[in-house]
Image (cartoon, rainbow, N blue to C red; front, side, top):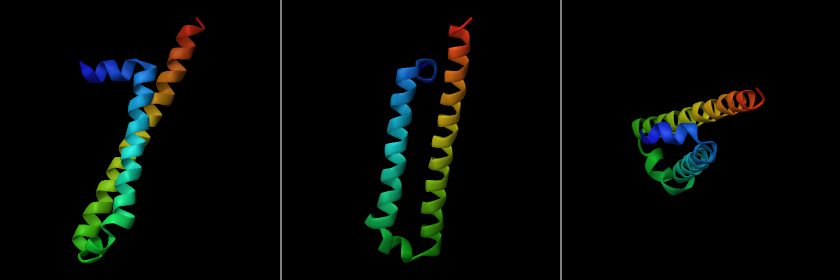
Length: 80
């Protein structure tokens, strides 16, 4: 129910998308500057951390693509 409300309202969708981008950038920054020494200690930790970053980045890209398609659909329905 909550996800349906988020996905159908443009302002709420954009707010969530912006928060997701900020979270992703913080996750990347922590990996680059915060715990880089810890990550260098093990190839497994390094791989898991950056695989997690990749998953988060893919989710943000899919969410942004959904937002773009939803905006196109909303504008087409508005012009009918």
